[in-house]
Structures are given as structure tokens and as C-alpha cells.
Length: 507
Image (cartoon, rainbow, N blue to C red; front, side, top):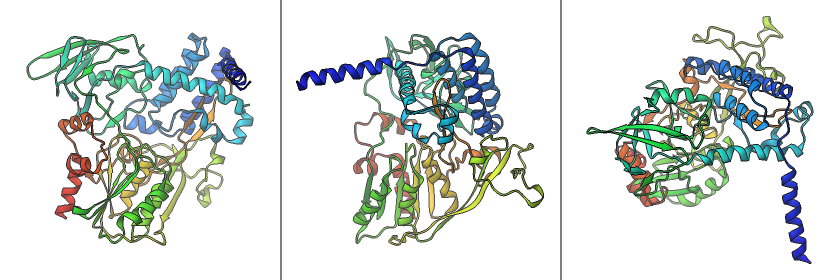
């Protein structure tokens, strides 16, 4: 009987899933949804000015131009990809399609306004499945690294019968300079990094551009000191390497003590479980002398600010005082949901405009210009030495908040390389749903003007001590079979760690 019941439940669940389909949209509904999106991405999202001034493209105009393409589409799935492209133009991880679990963050008033209920999460799951399937269909992963302004082969690799040697420079793609080829992809590949030195976007994942079909071919030209190498690759094919490469290895939370350096080491792969670190710090450091602290947040995608703040409160000997300035678009239609800074007495009822010598228009209004202090906790170690925050290009969101906090304390030294992404202090992005298609997305409503003197500063990518790894360093790391966060690897093979440890010995 139980077996029959199980079969019945499985059939019932499969039938229920089969009944969940994308809504059939009329042209009128598509236009209405896209107009709702345009408001969110041009009047709520505040990044258009930065993209124009720093990245040299008109984000707002690009998004509005997409509206014309609705005339040429009929299917809801095609409309989804149009929405995804509009979100991608923002080039910010806090402006993107989100999974159904974020539905709970949709404001209760918005749920009424947009006629949405929990039942819509089934549709949201289908959209996410479309996105995941699309990403997985691009199988071509070139073992290359962007370093010193060039894309170089991380190891010898072979495509069909052609071998590209270690160190070869990727110079051209589809008969264009590789740099010229990548710049227009701002609507096709999410989260491009910005190279502040060469003033251009870069990504090693350009073979996953959504404007191409996975069955398409791309022409690649590599060069060495001796020869030029051309290969024509299918995007749904793979290359062969002698050793498998791993590019990210988040590892596990770790607290350790390096006896020879009298150094406390913390590895935080994401911003969560702050209480775990506090407990382990007390256990690991009991009876020991601490001269330095290394707080390793490489490849940390973010999480919750209070988690890393809990750790710093337990370490530092004095409060960290941050003077944080937030601003939002002056024409944000949801101003009533922001904690607005008061207007001046002579401008009661008007937004308090943010003034900056590099902004010639009334674009932004102050949201807050507050002193934000996190105090030393009651059981702090009262550590007075340097705390090295080890970062890399893959730190984002809450990890960016920690990086920015380093600018407010001589005790905190962020060390590593620039992210090329928006960092700084922010807030929980606003989660919204398009009323007819039920596409769930979020977007960032604030811009961090803390310590900003020029447009580039809005990225908050300052690094107090820059570490530039060599191509050989990256190759050794990515081809290693060892756990990157094993203590032996950290002490003897991790080049960034060795740089800090040598710095500690000298000081």
C-alpha cells in the first residue's frame, strides 16, 4: 500500500510541475512590464552617471533602446531574455534575475500593486531554470588569465589537434582585437570587471556571451614570440589540458594560529556565521601572543555585514567610526521608502541635492550622511596590531563593505588586488516582480558617496597594499591538487600569503 502511495505522490508532483508554464503575454503586457522595468533601472538604480563617466557607455539609453525589440518577439521566453539583457546592462551583481527564495523580500504593498502571490514562485522557478540551462550550455572554458592588460594562457591546452602553449597571448577574437570584441558585451555577460589602468572591461568568460548560440563558432588568434596560432572553437565544446584547472575554491570557515609568525589567521568564504569565528578565536588564541591578524576574504561573494562586524568588534581595541554618505536618484519614484535626509530650511519639501565638483547636474539627493560606529565588544581581545584584510578580484557585496571599512582605520590594511566591481557600503537591494510576466529581479537603489572625490571613487576599489601575482603564480594555484586553505599550502605555496608573512617578519 505504501509503495502505491509513493508512486501516486510522485505522479501527482510531476503532474503539478507540468502544469506550471510561463504566462502567455500579449504585446500590451510586454510593453507594460518593460516600462515598469525601465523605471526601476533608470529612476531607481543610480548607476547611469557612473557608467557614462567611468565606463563610457550610456546604460540608460541602451536599456530604453531594447524596448523596440518587443515588436519582433512573440514568446514569453524571448521576453525574459530581453529583460535579462536590460538587467545585464547595469553590470552590477545587485541588479539581476533572482531565485524564487527572494520572493519573500517583495514589499507587501508591491504585492498588492503588482497582483502577485506565493503561487507565482512556480513561474519564477521556470525562469531561473532557463537561465541555468543557458549558462550550462556554454561549455567552452578557455584556461586564460587577464593579467597586466593581456589575456594569457594559464597552461598548455589543446583544441582538437591544435595546441596553445603556456603564456601565449590571446590577441584577436572573430577578427577583432580581443579588447574591442569584449567592450560591446556589456548587455550579454554579467559582472564584467573594470580595469582602471587601461580603462576597459575585461572577463575571461567571454565565451559565455548570451548574444551567441552555444553551437556558434568563434575564431581565436593567439601569439607567442615565435608564431601565431589560430583556432576555431564551438562554444558547446571543450579544450583539453594536462591537469584539470580549478578557478574558485571557497573552502571552509577556518581559524588558525601560525606559531612561527605569532599570527592569527581567519578564512571567511562568505559573510555568515560570525559567532563561529568569535568562539574559535577565543579557543585558538588562548594563552598565545598575537602580533598580527590576517583576515582572508578572497573570493567572498558577500552575505551579511553584521557577521564580519561581529569578528572585528571581538578583535579591535577601539571603536571604528565610519562617516558614510548615501545618495539616491533625485527622481526615484519610491522616495517615500527611503530614510531621507532633511532638506535645508529654505528648501522645505524639496529633496536635499548632493553637490560634488565633478557632477554638473542635480542628479542625486542625500539619503544619509551619518556617523556609523561599531563598538568594541565586552570580551574583545583588544588587539592593537595590524589586521590585514586579504582580498582579490572576486570580492563583492558585504565583502566590499569590509574592504571599504579599511579606509576608516589605520589598523585595518586591505591587501591584494582591485575587484573592478562596485564595492563600498550599500543596502539590501530592492526585490521586485514584473506584474504580468512575474519575472523576479532586484536592483540597487543607493550609491555610496563616502570619501568620493572623482567618479572612479564610486567603485570604492582602493587597495592600501597592492599585490600583483604573476602568470606563474596563478597557474600554480589553479593547477594545484592541494586544498588552497590547508595550512601547509597557505604557508609555503600561496604567493599572496607569503607576501603578507614576509611583510610581518619585516615589521
